[in-house]
Structures are given as structure tokens and as C-alpha cells.
Figure 1 (cartoon, rainbow, N blue to C red):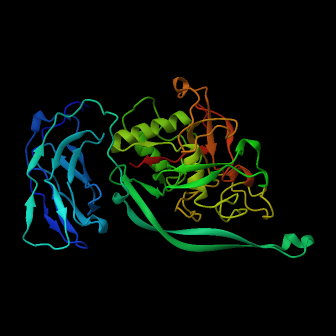
Figure 2 (cartoon, rainbow, N blue to C red):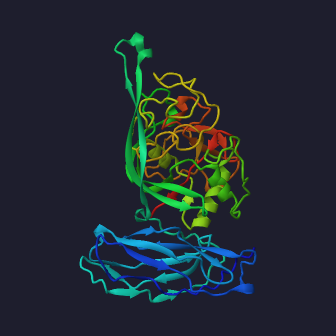
Figure 3 (cartoon, rainbow, N blue to C red):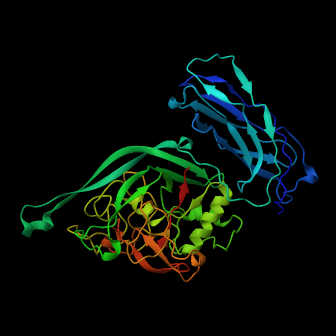
Length: 453
């Protein structure tokens, strides 16, 4: 398939919006393509159709909400099946501010094909319903042959709210130490709301990316924490910027979809997992495989996806907690998938499932992330260091030698525990250190983060 030259697109400038927008009012915009028959001149010779992504950037002026899929399907014999429609809602803090709305039509790799840009607009409290303007300038730059290092800017204004259930494990201890086996472990549940970006990998498969707010936390474990080790120390304060993180570990459906995309650096197996299930986490993937997944996802979406740094992972896992687990002082197999024959602290023994479970069946943490404890170990972007001595204070990825960073023999890092691990291995601070970049087994998976600027 020849994808070097995009078909020439004629854009009909039919996008309209009020020049002076009323706060609290949403305005409908429509993006469509003027019909044109390409026939035999169609450069994507093996395809009857071409999916074109519609990317909207309105800065901080408006909140963008798509009505349906943000994709135009162009047929080689002319026209689109349906336009892209979306709502622009003025942000409360955008009064008397000026800005532009930029609409980019991009191919599946995120390469711009056509860019439309509005005149500057100002959001004010008063509005005239008849005061409409139309997009006047249409730019059609030559599409680059290769995707550059520039990515679409992801902003929190692009996200939508979602509701999730948070679990906590409360321990009602017996006063008599000889009767500690009678301790009662009660799971409390609470409904909360956060923000997420839904990234469509194809027409049927999505990736839910949760907004992780900026903040500070103490990384590592104190000496008083049971079963903790020197590799988890010294504890140190880390400042973390806002980023997006996968709500779940990457599933087998998501893996198969991205693995079918064009190769960037290395081949990927379409179905590597030992425990089959579309909503189970993918496993039997190496650190190098996970890096290739992120590279393909980045090229497909035009956004910067990567593995989390170790500090980002622990910050997201803790979600504001300082206890060994985000659930509390201990865990049970009602909350986490691990080897229940080996509990932590005063928790009772539980079930040993001997396999992965579907993602999202256990309650989330305070940020809205599921399966941060147990199920599969999760790759981080960092090289492995013996401890936190000299660790950065800003959550950046720790790399020993950039020239050897992607060497298959370098020691990499995993977090979170697995279905086969002890409860102590699932602690928020626990670090595992015996996997090389090329190693893969049924214990290891990963989740991705998306950079926010």
C-alpha cells in the first residue's frame, strides 16, 4: 500500500460559530469535505476508503465535545459518508479573552493533510444570535513523508467526566491479641468522578486515559513498613506534573489492534498472551515490545504515548495515600488478584486464581485507576537502579546510558505485583529487578501514559 502521498482534499469552508459567544451556551460546528472523485488517481491504491481524523484545538477558550466519531470516511469515488460534528462550549474563565480554533485533518498516522484556522475570536458575556462568521482561511500544506517529533497538544479541556467506584479496606481489630484471627476486614465503597480522554484505536476499540492531577508525594517506603526493603529507600519528595494514564493495563483487544498497525522498529505478535480473553491484560510482552506498542500508538494518534516513569507509576498508584496499598494497610483477594496463600500483615488467606482476571473487575483507586495492585506486573520506562539514591525530584525517567537504553540486555523495572505474586509484592513501593528488556512471561504486562502540555 502506497501511503507516501495523500489524496488532494478540497475542503468546503462551512464551519460557523458565533463571533461573540455566550457563556453557558454550546455552539455546533460541522466539518465536511467537498465531494471529489479520485478514481484511478487514488494514491491509496489498495483501499476503497480512507479514514481521516479531525483534530480540534481551541486552546483554553472552549471545551470541545464530539457528537459521534471524530473521523471522516472518504470514499475513492467521491465524498464522505457523514460530516464530523462537535460542540464548542466557552470555558467559564475565558471571558474577554481572544483565541483561534484550529481544525486539523490528519491521516491515521497523525500526519496533517489539511489545516483550517479561524480568525481571532473573543468570548464575551453578551451575544448577538445573528453575529456569525465563517472560517475564511484554508491552508493545504504538503504532507510530510515522515512523522516528525511534533505531537498534537493534549489539554485537560479535551477530556470528559466519568464515574467510578473506589474501594477501601477497613480493619476492625480485636482487643485481645490472642484473638487477632477474629479481626474483621470490611470493604467500603464510594462513588467518585474524574476526567478521562477516550482515544479511539479503530471504530470499535478505545483506550480510556485518566487525568492524573499534578501534585507532590513521598516516593518509597518508610523503614516501619512491613516487608519493605532498602531498594525502596531513601524516601524522597517528588513533584509530578499533570499527565494521562491508562485506566487499565493494556488489554488483549487493545494490543491486537495496535499490533496490527505498521511496524516502527520491531515486529509484534498479534496474540502473545498465555491466558486468553479480550478484556484480560496482555502478557508475555517484553519491555521492548511495550516500547514498540507506544511508538505505533504515538504515530497512529499524533499524541505522545510512552511507558510511565517509575515515579509517575507510584504517584498514580498511591493516589494520595501513604499506606502500603492504596486500599489501606493491607489487601484481600476480594480487592486484588494475587496468590491468596500469602497474605500481608494481619489479612486472612484468600483465593489463588492461578491466572489473570479481566481488567476493571475490582474497585479503583482515588484517581480512578484499576488493577494497580496485582494481576500483571507493569513495565516502567526507567532503567533499574538498586535504590532511590540520587533519584530526581521531578518524576523524570531515570536512564543510566542513553546509548544503551534500548539494549535488550539492559535491566528494566516492573511495578505492581501479579496474579502469581505474594501480597507484599503488590505494595505501592515494591520494585522488581530481575527482568531484562527482552524478557517476557505470563506475569508481565503494562499500561501507557500520554503527555499533557
